[in-house]
Length: 339
Image 1 (cartoon, one colour):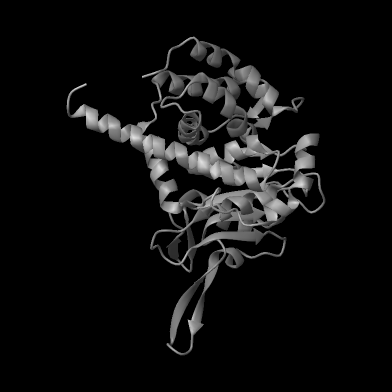
Image 2 (cartoon, rainbow, N blue to C red):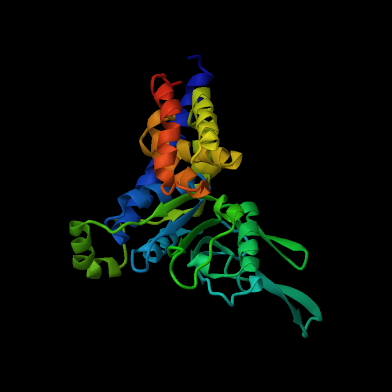
């Protein structure tokens, strides 16, 4: 290593260390607020650093809303951006209108001019509660926000900020009054996470810690600044190594899934593109500066399963994915991927 490369390597290591410490700080605060959901917290931390949205699914009372609120409370705004609040919750209902979430243009008689009033989508972390209970028009407005980080009102686009992160919750589709999300919107979620019932000890911990979790977090569980998350995203993108064999494995898995007789419609190329930053964030979370087959195997079900349309006779997307991905993953495991 020459003299010019050495400072660059030191700066790279310092930035990755800073991003890693941010992960630890964020997770500690979330785990204080939500008990027995460590795997879900891991995935949400990866998602926000990979700049991807998350869909949580389970029956009411499983902690989906509590977790989303805890994330919003874990971040504070330290940059002079336009007036965007840190956290907003939107309760989706069948009678909701697009303007109810995007905002609207209002005529001001005093100035004889029109003024835009931002809606609840103008937040850095948005909890879209029961997203599968609203109309297609509202879903279209959400789709633009999630895909472009902007909303369009009266032919004018309004920016939602760099951090903009959506945690959507939905109840299972067989409950009364719910509707399936559009395929295009499903594809915009990086992860879909099923929140199964927590174990006995964790459930006891929830009951025993009610008073503790109602009190402010204090100095032992500090909030993280918004700018640090943006900086961590850049560090992960620039300094976590992805070998080309990882790319080849992802493409081979996608083709195997598309060719499976159990799949009516396979995964999109977008899902592979979205998976790369998630793999990088996953690697850093495990204190590595390179992606491995272990990272791919861990994330595949959460990235691919909700994007599949199964053929008649198939009812378990995870099983189909595991079977299709087995060959490419075994080939990848035999490779050395460290740069």
